[in-house]
Length: 133
Length: 383
Image 1: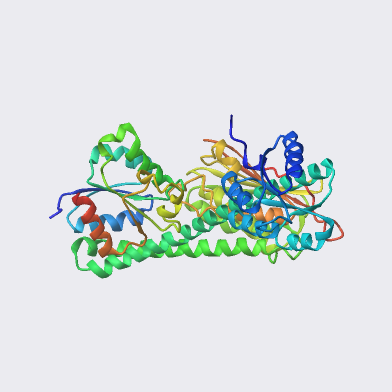
Image 2: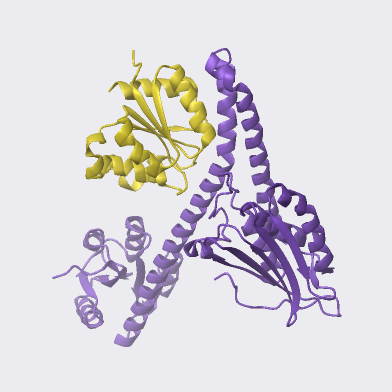
């Protein structure tokens, strides 16, 4: 059982944070939430999550990509570079489309991508799979 | 040696040795890198290898004809510009070649200048075509990003509502959901209002752009219009402890325009001034006739707008400020204001000092006695 795995949710949409937190806690995860990319990066060091759920478009239209890259690349977050990142957004352009030009640079892509609104069963299945690793 | 750019590379295909030599000489002196081939098959292999910007090909050669070579070149790369060389006897073939996609033809014998002119023109055309393709791609990308952004703004509240309802449906009996159910319903309603506003504002923008809202150019007196808006906002201002005052200049302030448009413009500005204020703050609305223009100023004592945000303030979906409650507008209000002001031949601008407040100023051409004034063209103040 994956109970007590820690998940960090980074999203500027209060309602999304609230509903996702509720459903993850209901499944037995420990959830921390951050309202911006910057706050997310501050929290990651404190929370030491097993999985990050990350929104793409926050204050900046590609803020989530910046956070993704910081976690994967910046020396400061080196200890978290293997933490899986599940990106979520209601944006039209998927990460695959956005980074089609950079197919060889797998690192700048998130581990998984799901569109909002989340389909709860497949969201939970994805979370289980990613948080287990 | 550095590899030459595609645009500077030319391939000449001609079975006539003297012609190949003279082409090489003339084009070489133009600073172009020239490769020559004596028949179509070798020439095509050369084109595939060299990726030239321009090919000069003789129409009449043994083996592959110039026309066939032309078609095959464009199979390799349709952006390669092809000039055909032809004898007088084959003028008809030259025309056929033009129809098949050749850029121009050069009848034999030709003077060095003729070749130089035609090659310069052909390379220029290729450069322009590449430039316009690049711009087209850029425009397309911007459009796609914009559409993607708009749809994101529309889908976000919908996604939030959907998710709340889904959770209530799935886990309605779980105590942690039951406890939140009321709050979630309330917030879903708020998000649906947010979404409706966004759709309304978006439609307003589209209608202004379609010119139907500002098509009508009645002479409207702004003074009573402002008084009505201020009266309407006063109660709301009092609720957040903001004092709203209005001083209009003497006499009527007529502008040619559409009453509902002008209402939207000034209501947005005054509403913002109240919203982005502080308890105990003030909003002062002033209007006066100045040199043939009606100038309306809305001054607030709010938190102000950072200097770097000012140039972007009137752009669609730009949001510089959070409302005191942390809520945010949809980023269309000021874009609508600017579009209305511009459509009416006027300007809108903002000044601000962080910590002290902001001043929004609208200038509209005043209506003359002839009822409708010619729009005054003046540089946009907001810049």
